[in-house]
Amino acid sequence: MSSPEPKQSKRDEPGFELNRIWLRFRNPAVERIFVDHTIRRSINFIRAYLIAAVCLYASFGILDSVVGGAALKSMLIIRYAVVSPILVGVFALTFFPVFFRVAQFALAFAVLSAGEGVVAMTAIMGPPFNSHYYAGIVMCTIYGGSLIRLKFHYSVLISIFLVVSYQIACLVNPIPMASYISNNFFLIMATGVGLFSAYIQELYIRRSYVGQRIVEQKNELVSAALAEAVRANKSKSEFLATMSHELRTPLNAIIGFSDIIRRRLFGPMDDEKYTDYAKDIHDSGSHLLSIINDILDLAKAESGKLVLNEHDFDLTETLEACMRMCRGRAEANKVELIFFGGQSEIRALADERLVLQIVANLVTNAIKFTPGGGMVRLYVSATPQKGIVIKITDTGIGIAPENLERVLRPFEQVESSYARSHNGSGLGLPYAKRLAELHGGELKLESELGKGTSVTVTLPASRLVEIRARKVLKEAV
Image (cartoon, rainbow, N blue to C red):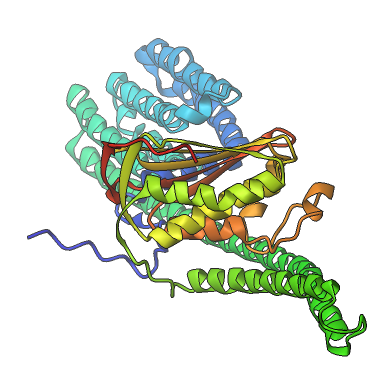
């Protein structure tokens, strides 16, 4: 039986869960971003604290000269030839980009070097002053934990290491037992208070960071929602403007021609003009019905009420039927229509009517926006690894890169003199995309302005039943 998931603290926002013992975000990526953010924001303070540390550490050389005795030379070497150059080196490193990658290690090394320098001096000093220098360790731990943005768990480890090192120094250079106990009492208590202060300080900084990030994320969501609302409102306005033309033009034809027939303006009903007007009324009515059907079909698909009627069928045969349906429109537009892939029988498990609708929408769209003399190609292929791939390419007017996302949104059309000369609701691509997604697939659009467009519909491998060579090659459609 799997162990239960740890309960999330009510104070921790999702994604910002905090390990409250070591003060680290449980998500490593969040921790890395926080540390980098904190270091970069505090870099000037870090530099100031490092310079102050160099000055303080160097100034204690005055005390060394008073109490150092025989160990003075060694103490000055530790202070000025070892520790101070390390602090200056870390300070200099802050001016290079590499510092932000190694900041915590560099700062920890600086604090540890300063503390161990004090421990080393304690180990070589003569009595009675060797029992007094432990106070320098307290200064190092407090400085590292509270001032230079060292992470809390590093401060804890360094403090423990320095306290243990002091015990070793006291064994190497013994001090009176009363002083030893007194020194350790104050050292441990002062270090503990310093670490507690560091803990509270870093906890506050981390909580402030989380609050700031949450506000930023919510602002981003609000901005995105506002932009989407503006885009949707613009789409609505454009749709209403388009539909005003799309609906009024055929309605005017229907009303005008039907009125002519009703009033018999050209005399008896056997006049041939009445037949032409009846044809115009029929075509206008069919156009209106097509627009309304597009809107209703997309609304049904978007609302999740479109149910797939899945069955096993020959996809190749369905695509050939689609090409026959579109042949007349292609010839009328003087566009060459070619189908590649008729040599194999691809059996698919899907809704045949909707797959036909996807391909018909894409092919008619390609024909519609391909000038005379152009070419529209339909490809189909299938493999057990990649699934079923249906690709429609054309040599049409193409779409600018900034409009690729736009044309996949309902009711939007790209304005151009060529596009505006064609009727349409702007629902063909969005509806085909939604139908592909209902089948668990995807629709990808690639285009180059003035050179053509390629639309690829991929259905998952689970939709592929089998692939086999056709027994009789059918005539090219």
